[in-house]
Length: 385
Ligand code: FAD
Ligand code: UDP
Image (tube, rainbow, N blue to C red; front, side, top):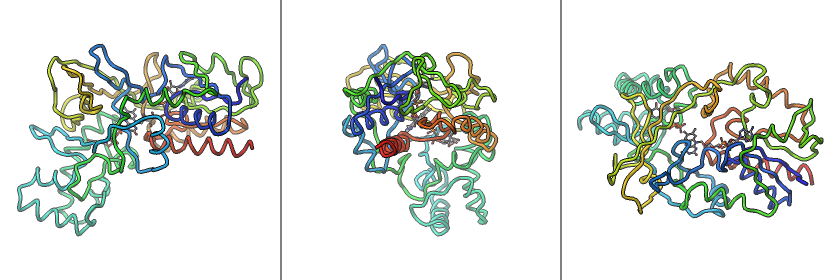
């Protein structure tokens, strides 16, 4: 009945399913545990009619033309240059720390000198990870690095990861480098924004295809079981491709122990006022227990609303308890080794594919995930032609 089974209806699963259904003519079954599609990109109107992102604020950003083109088949975009500020004392300063930020935190003559130093050390337009900047030999540059470390990274990272910046993988803090330019945008990508009618609508269109059946509210283990290297679908050996985008440890009942994750508690608040903070995102980099506040109407561009809804993000260590969601893989050698033990269990499963933030225990943005999904669908198609 089905040629292919995709587990999870997030960006990884949805793109794979659509491409296989449309270009390879596969009959695809998408199994999704939640009551809705979209994975962590899911959005919906709250009780006040304000479109909110239930699993944290998502901004699509990419420089990958093929990904932008592919997703644009299913949505128009509300594009903008995404900007973030950090609340440091009474000041709101642009993040990533850039030359404008430099001029806000140092008086003019000193900022002018420091700006020249940074430009001659790294070149205009360059992006320097904070952990690299801290190693610079020039004491004045190291002083800037210390300011950035203490006021942008230390407390925020402690909240987000429960560890200091030097204790986590440098690729994580490297996502928000010091930028040697006057560009206040959070990302440098050519395309930045959100789907015009929301992410969920984009996913609905992507999954609306005659060859795709979606079953929400169903854990894959209700339909599939894994016996040695065989996958059984409703009791019979399934010969087609299976793409799994859930957590890998869960598939094997966490037999080697749980893969560690950070989770988030999202607390939504509604206010009967036009605006709460006048912008989409404020990072709390030195105070508070939450990491950031997002005000949705400034992210989605929604106009037809009188009040406003915000969300505060409180990070905590994922334990696997019921209702908790694993959001961020904690990237280090020990955890990767544990992941590899689980992955080894799938080595003999011929047409079984791991894809996604959870299944690959990786830190992917939406666009990178979509690109990998497009590639996987192409590979599956090629292998079986
Ligand atoms: P998911 O979206 O997690 O989808 C996996 C799906 O599989 C889920 O729906 C899950 O319910 C389902 N599933 C799992 N196990 C089973 C099972 N056993 N049976 C059935 N279904 C199952 N990226 C950006 O590009 N821009 C951003 O601004 C951005 N902001 C983010 C903010 C936060 C707080 C977080 C956590 C991530 C953010 N990301 C952002 C990353 C983005 O969420 C991911 O790149 C993307 O969601 C990955 O898609 P995925 O399909 O791999 O995983
Ligand atoms: N970070 C920080 N202060 C900030 C923004 C980011 O310390 O104001 C650090 C923090 O460790 C965070 C990492 O940089 O986890 C990556 O930030 P990014 O915004 O990319 O995280 P995301 O929410 O997208 O996962």
